[in-house]
Amino acid sequence: MNEKKEAVSVPGVNDITIRVVYDNNPYKEGLETAWGFACLVSGAEKTILFDTGGDGSLLLDNMEKLAIEPNGIDTVVLSHIHGDHTGGLSSFLEKNPNVTVYLPKSFPKRFKDNVRDKGAEIIEAEQSLEICENVYSTGQLGMLIKEQSLIIRTDRGLIVITGCAHPGIVKIVDTAKDLLKDNVLLVMGGFHLEWATAGKIEKIISAFRRSDVQYVGPCHCTGEKARTLFKKHFGKNYINIGAGKTITLADLQ
Ligand SMILES: [Zn+2]
Ligand SMILES: [Zn+2]
Image 1 (cartoon, rainbow, N blue to C red):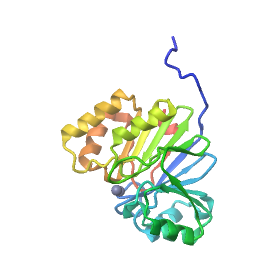
Image 2: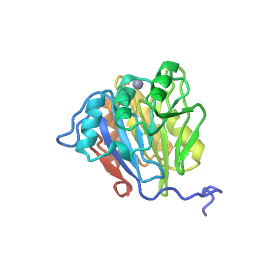
Image 3: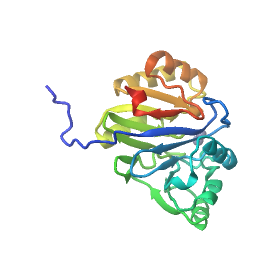
C-alpha cells in the first residue's frame, strides 16, 4: 500500500544544523538584531552561508558570538539583490574570499564584478541546480525581483529556506516539491507577508496544509500577524525563529 513512494529514492542528509545568524526577530540573548536575514547550514558536503544580512559588522559580530568561523564556510548563497540580504557580503569576503558565491543570474554586472574582485568564485543560478549532494537551488524564480531559495534533502523530507520569498512562498514550496519529488519537512525564512491581509495568510496556510508541509519557521519579513496565524495553525510544529536560533533534525520529530 505504498503506491505514493517515489520510484527513485535517494537518501538525504541525516544530520543538518541550521543556525540563524541574522534576523530582525530576537531569539538568543546577546545577539544583535537588525532588518535582514542570514543563516548557516552545516552538515552537508558544503558549509553554506545563506544570505548575509544587511550589515557586515553585525553579521560578523553575531557569527563570532555563535563561534562560527568565517573560514569554515566554503559556499555563500544569495537569495536576491536586496540590501538586507546582500549587505554583509563584502565584509564577509574580506574575512574569507575563498568561497563560491551562488547568485541569481539577473544580478547586476557590477555586483558580480565586485565579488570576483574580492577573489570569490561566482556561480550564476538561472535554472535549478545542485550545490552539493542533497543541497539545491530552486533557480531564480519570480518576475520583478528574481530570487532563489535553498532546498536541503534530508532523510525525513525537504527543508526549504527562503530569503524574502518575493516570487511567492507557495510557488517556492511547490517548485521545491516538483523538483525533488519529496515531502516538505520544514519551510523557514522570510515569507514576505508583512502587509498581507489575514485572508491571504489563511489561504497560504491552507496551501501549506495541502502540500503537507510539516513544520514552519517564518521569520524576517513574514510579519507579526502572519507569524501569529502560522503559530495558531501549526501549534507545536511552529518554530520560533530569530537571531541565534539553532535548528537540527532532532527539533523536527
Ligand atoms: Zn528581506
Ligand atoms: Zn527582499
